[in-house]
Structure formats: structure tokens, C-alpha cells
Length: 324
Image 1 (cartoon, rainbow, N blue to C red):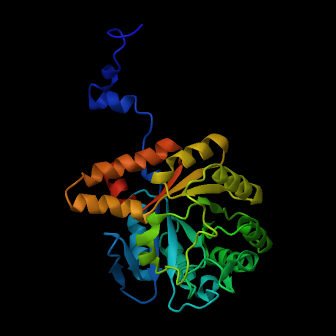
Image 2 (tube, rainbow, N blue to C red; image 1 turned 90 degrees about the vertical axis):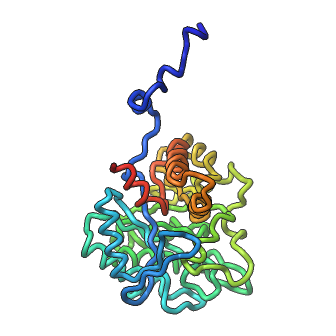
């Protein structure tokens, strides 16, 4: 049987019917909102390449978290901008570090909001790399101890979940062992399992002040042409104890999200990264695209590909539209 008996347009004829048969739906529940916390008071410095996003002191971070919670967004992820940087990124795992202090303030004021922390050293090191440097190279095993210390310090401060983004081999196992050894057996790990050495991170590096001072991160982040390798990385992280696995970036790696969703039964997160966000904002500013519609189409595509959770700088704007 074919045309004219089969007419797919019948189910597209009006908005109510389209809603009834819609296969993929977005909700504020899907979003995790990234925040950049810095030292000082009453600091709210807009990030020039990421309109509507800010480096903020803790007092403003708390206000932002209150707004996020009211919008129905369940979680934020924190990135810290230290007062001082050094070779070993000591503030990353200091009890009074900027992220540790922010966690305590958020949990005191918005206790029901899930606070996730990025576990990495790049924002805190003077060289801007994600690990310990020896003779110009990032040393994998020497970095693991520091990442584990960072994760434990976040858990002690009250974080609900930790998210290692460094791409060192074995870091999930090292973090799981340290968390469990310190009594934090209930803290989940959301692993940046397939994190690519992408060109879409430029605006984030402005936001987090984390640009490498020499070389690049291609010796530890994944090569963009590879897809089978992503499945191997995810499998390893799951074996080491990851509770959620993440793909980063999202939009240029929808095929990777799909393959992981089809292969593994853990929750899958995807990071709709800064460059993806900024392209939409720039195009909308120039009048070349309808920014709101493109935003929602992109977020829907990420969920349609198989992501259960979406880390996105669009979270507040998208949630506001979804709540109407």
C-alpha cells in the first residue's frame, strides 16, 4: 500500500497532533547548568564570547542557583577560577578552595539543588594543563593522586556528584577508591568518558582562564576522527566505577552519543559546549538565524541521539521557554 492511502502529513496537520505523536521531548529535568565561580564579593563579570554567562563570586553564584532551582533545573556543575595558580594546582584540592567554599554556600541556601563539580587541574595550574608536568609532558600516574584528592575535597565540602574531565587513564578507579576510602561511597562519578580534543572549547578557555601555556591537549584528549575508541574509553570508565558517562562536545559528536546509548545501559550525558553555544548566539545577534528555535532544535537533537542529561549554557533560557 502506498500513496494516496499512506499520507504521513496527516500526523503533522496541526500543533496538537504533532505534540501527541512527538517522539522526543525536552524538559528542564534534562539540563545541567555550568557555572564559573571566582574569588571576591559582588563580582559578576560577563564572558565576552559567551553572552549571558559570567565569572561570579559566591554571593552571585548562590543567587544564580536559586534561579536555576526555581526554573526546575535539577543540577549545576561548578568550575573554579582560583586566586593564585601554581605548578600543581594546589587550590583545586584545598579545603578552602573557591569551589569547596561555593559548594558549602550553595548547599546551605539551595539544599535541594544537585551540585556537581568538575574534577580537573587545568583551571588551577600555572601551565594550564590537566595534570602534573615533568620535562614538558603531562604525567598520567602522578596526576591521579591529585585528582583523587580534589574529588574527596569536593565530597567533604558537600558536593552531590563529581565529574572528572582530565582524560587521564585510570582516573575513575583512583577517584572511586579514594572516595570509598574516605566514606563517600554514595557519591556518584559522572565521567567525561569520551572527551575529544575539539576546536569548540575556545570560549570556555576564556571563561575558565584555562588556556594551555604551551602545546595543546591532544596527547590526552581524544582524536576527533575516532569513534570506536570512544566505545573503548566508555567501557573502561564503566569498569572502573563510573555511574554516568559523558560525551564532549555534543553537537559534532551525535553519532558517538548514539553509539554509546545503543551499547551501554548507564545514563549518558552530553556536553553542549561553549563554542556550540557561542555560534548560536553570534548567528542570532547577526540576524542570520532564529536563536531560540535553533537552540531548541540543537538541544532536541542531542536528546534524540540518546543523551539522558545535557550540560548546556542554554539551560536557563531553554527551561524558561519550556515552562511557558
